[in-house]
Image (cartoon, rainbow, N blue to C red; front, side, top):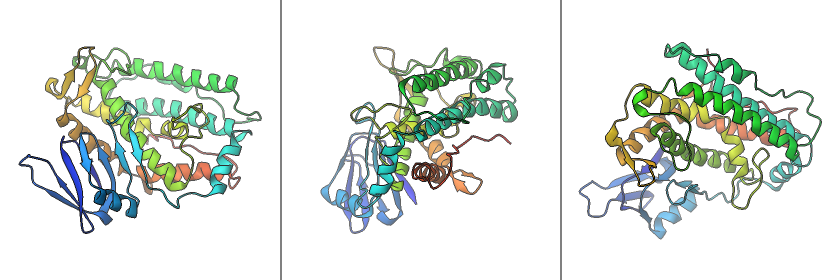
Length: 334
């Protein structure tokens, strides 16, 4: 199976039999044929056009399409048809009214914090980088998942978000000493990103969001009915919850490695009038290749994308009462 990635403006996707035929306008770049049965997903990060025939194949074979640059938050098109059941979604909605909401949200924050500390441990062990006491401070913020007999109210949600924010502050503070000085990483910036590391994270998290969305709909869950992240019109709150388990192992480590190895040069970025950093097409190609290789990395008996599906399915089982608790994905350092 392959992920089709489009980064060249003017890409034109049409159907030819049971194949996608991709051409590039007036470009001399050769046409590409991709068998539909071998296409796992399509990522669009350019101005591209799809024919109705291409959409027919997308719908027929249920192929997810992720637009990374159409809107600030991206967009995901997944023809899910028969995926999911009323039982799965009802149990997800019902969990918001009982103690499972608190247990799930606490588990997610626990994993998010633990994974930050574990990535720092990984850098210390495998990249011979000296790590400060910030790692221990981060671990001390991990909330307990025992004796959670209350529902997830606003006060508890704020407590959890505060713990995660404190851990993130220490984590990025530590990374300012790890990212090579030439990249000028002083603090985490978001929108706009004013340093290359933050720009890499923003882009990578958008790609990860697409993958988590796919996993959520494959399992049949409602992408909008979250717990830790409050519901808001059009906001994929459950996807944002589930992402927390995978940020470090799927995206952060890839971005950090690119910079530690000094693979990113000045001509790989563009700076707008408001000092926002944008990735060039060449850097996106390099970064996406590394990210998709990471998605296919096998941890124990599953690829990381399979772990995303597995964790979402475990959450569904927990909400339906088929298992007693939810065990989040942890970035293990051996």
